[in-house]
Image (cartoon, rainbow, N blue to C red; front, side, top):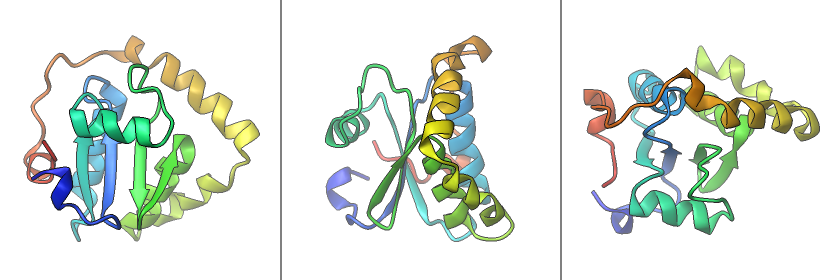
Length: 137
């Protein structure tokens, strides 16, 4: 599957494939996305890097996942909240986390993002079957 064949309103998650947290988030979404609403792309891939640039983010730092829901991009804690909301019950109860003011949420998120590799790196993790079936190359 390529980015050219993806409709602009397709829900999409761009994640750091080397980050334990980020790839764990992608696997979690793939496992619980019973209606298969999301497709996935690693931030290290050409399409992932292009999306980072498109949204004005540093593709070398990859300090946030990008979650696109119904054509609208979200980053940082709002990305997590948007993904949870799109999953439906029971995960949608976490969607209000996106209401936390950015002045509070962004510094907390950025602290975790800056330190995410302290919890481990994955050299070349094998994606789960659920994730692999929806991974954009």
